Image (tube, rainbow over all chains, first blue to last red; front, side, top):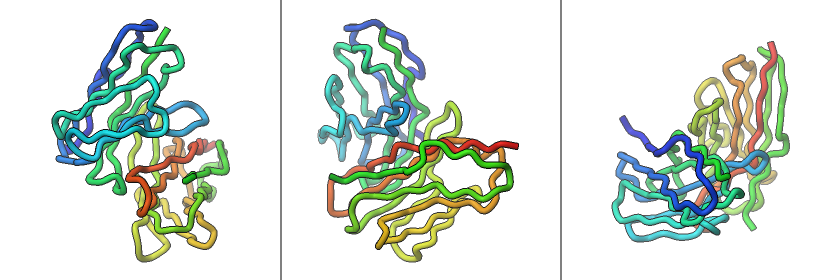
Length: 112
Length: 114
């Protein structure tokens, strides 16, 4: 089954404790992206990757890091989380950045 | 700057009534257009898309949308809604000659009342 998986689905952490949210896709897609969803703001892109070892900032990259060492994986790293990063995070993949994107189930992060 | 505007943050309608969710975008250059739906506590799934060709696009669950280049709009419609259509709906646009990315609108929460 074609899918995008994210782990964990729910995470509560404290300010400053480094965390990683994993994302994996099995569709051989070249393009992957991370979004955060906040009420009234829709989805905002954090980082995206057009291929292995190629990443770039989206609209709200501050406080986040990513890496793309393999085509299927695109982890999101928060090295020092802060309460304003409390949000619902989605990973997505597609053939290219212009195409239909396939979304993971989401990760609800709470930073206290 | 490229932007997408969904004019209504919430739309309440009665079951079996028609509905239109509005979406406008900032530029008339070549675009790809998408509508996604997010059911409660789920991720996003594609409802329909416009890449080229006929300006009237049909999607899943009886939804359709019309691309209007002169109005830079891509409004979503359904002639008769069901309780199961309760969800949040997102319009998204990619500009073919711009950055390789989707830009999303703020979302419209559709609530169906019995």
